[in-house]
Amino acid sequence: MEERLAVFLAEISAQFKEILKIHSLIEKKAEELKRVPNNEDLIISLAYRLHNLYCAYEDMFKIIARFFENQIEDFSKYHSTLLKRMQLDIEGIRPRLLSEESFKILDELRGFRHVFRHAYSYELEHERVLKLADKASILKKLFQKDFETFKEKIKEEMK
Image (cartoon, rainbow, N blue to C red; front, side, top):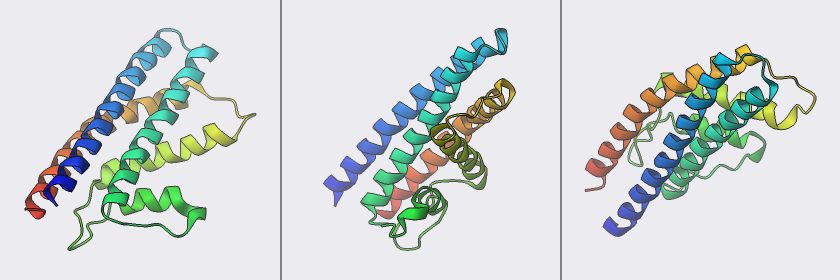
């Protein structure tokens, strides 16, 4: 089990580094957009990064669900179920990953990602995209704490 746990911790830590890279890109794009509001290319670029951010978080959630065999059978609600599951403390299996605050922001990012992917004629508003980028910045701080707490509890429980 120790080897399997070491691989798991390495995988989620590598994914966390990817998440942090995307957060940095979002912060840079948001600053550019604040200087040049209503620039359509910047708005689309920032929206794309926000989309990618949620995808990167979801990739981590998949790694966690797969490791703990938290299978999701209802594929019609896969994305929302996976996110909700990360907020659960599953006794005897694994601790929760997400705090209530992180969950709320991630759920908003999940909804935005859906709109970004499927609303082809939808015009992005720079204020809404910037507001979500600001929330992503808050999420970065919240999730860092959530992630460290999760890893410590996993290490304790798996000893």
